[in-house]
Image (cartoon, rainbow, N blue to C red; front, top):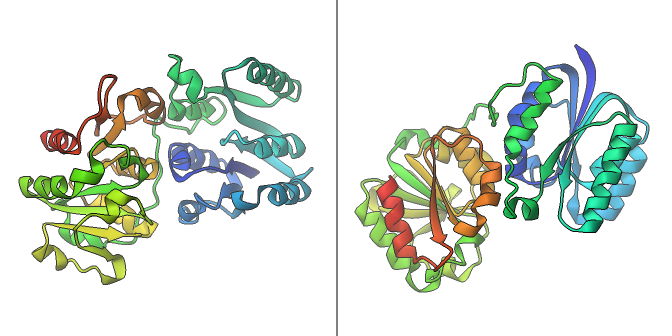
Length: 341
């Protein structure tokens, strides 16, 4: 066994999830594993018990955080350093840290200045014997050069022979509150990505109630600090977890549970019949990682980019909220979902 390994993953929950199994498998090759993460994905990473140390890079104080991290990590010694997030601070520290094995993912972007930067950094990485894999960024992908990030992360298998063709790693959830009503409900997660549906402010309340009456399962809606007009107008019982009881569903066909913690959120998705969202990254990847039927609502024009993040598609369905010609009403979206479930 080698001794010390350091990961960089200073980004979002969904970003971490699509590389989580690769990170877990790489970590099995080392006695000591450390990760530098964001204040956002720390909520998930702290529940994964194979890290010896977790450091938070707080994006709210970037300048001072960068100075602190440069001071603390410059010339520190590791056996391996792997940068997943493509952040400038992560790649700077990759150059400053001493390690036998260094690896990063470098983004290819449009525009001449970005191409110059790309060739400059690839030259630097080759000069310092830093291994890398190229990822296309959104603009490049939407111009027709498709990519798949989970598959690219698995290319670390060239250096770690225990990496498998699996995207997600989840620690077993000790919370089992919703297991008592397993498979009796459908989950819809509401966030800002619902707000561009053409008639969401006028018709969502009635459309949801009609949808709920037309299906043979309860409907549990989740949301987190949602202040959008369409959401505030909903005439549906809203509860937070401390006030929610399973018996509430005896009297309600549809209910909203707000601001769930990560453990209860995972438990809710794991025991559902089907999970639906407007491509909320953490929601979609958690649902797929738990091998649940997952319905992803999106604009057709966004599909090339959003598909970049999806590797396991056997339980995955897409419903469009707009296509290249017109916007689609919330009633028609919910009817398409009903046809799928």
